[in-house]
Image (cartoon, rainbow, N blue to C red; front, side, top):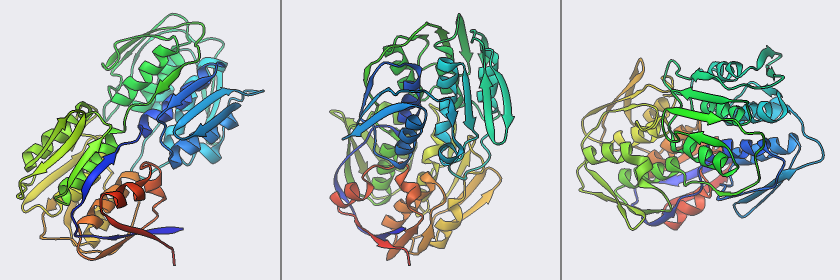
Length: 421
């Protein structure tokens, strides 16, 4: 296994091109199960998670070719309705095959999901949604087993303890597009990735009103068709590089992204003294040399993304003063605090909040990645720090950041890999 080595303390300069969205790709790839027609999807990022989803599609009977960011999917000889533990347990996003399998085949056996260790993330809203459409659900031997003679539209409220659920919204949408009648989903997730899935389903022939809003109206159709479609840019990757630029006082241009998807981050950074603006479709970052501490609370979109919480904490770690970072989406998502403190940060957790007392600088140290976005925070911290940092378990980073080493080296980062000792 590789260890990622970083020599920090340098400013970076140049352009970073953002890849297609991981969080859009996974449900859109799952949605290819809704038709037997050929489908072509462009700008699919080559990541550990997307490769896992490809293997899952193949295990479910699809023939898949993935070349240079373009994925072609067509029906194989025999479709399967069983999503095995071996694949689903490694990545929570793969649970979104439940909806399309149920919609197309009227049966699905899907392993309970795995993925990052960032707290309990139950599937109760997924089950509630498909049950409302007429599915019978059993949980047996670590699998969710769903069957239905037919699916019928219904009014479904998908609000949970911590707000809306992106994957539950995706699963219900994909089951409902082939159901009889009309389905209304209230408290639907509004994330750009759900709007992207909505656009993909509409291109396939689905009838969906209210895209991008918390209320979706889905009129079932009998069949969906093949389509060629392009994934939106990854807003979380873009946000990570923006925070990296701010934290290292670097001049980076972020290309191939949509600043409208990052308005909450732009607002928080402006309060900290960092200007982020759009220039002819590219994102530019300007800093005034003196930053102020800023407190952040994560919420479902359009609130501040939980997927940028750890990276923002790394940025705040060296800003003089106190900032408070709260996570209302995943309140236990603070495993990275211990590793940042190993590098000299002064952060303590109090309930669902982290109190960050800014220090003068961080120092390189051996650190351990615990989940995808925590890994990105440690990467930012390593590039800020004095000395050399070694990040272990970097397979987490490979789940969500395409061509990471290449992109960083191109803008002047001192980064390399060594074999685990």
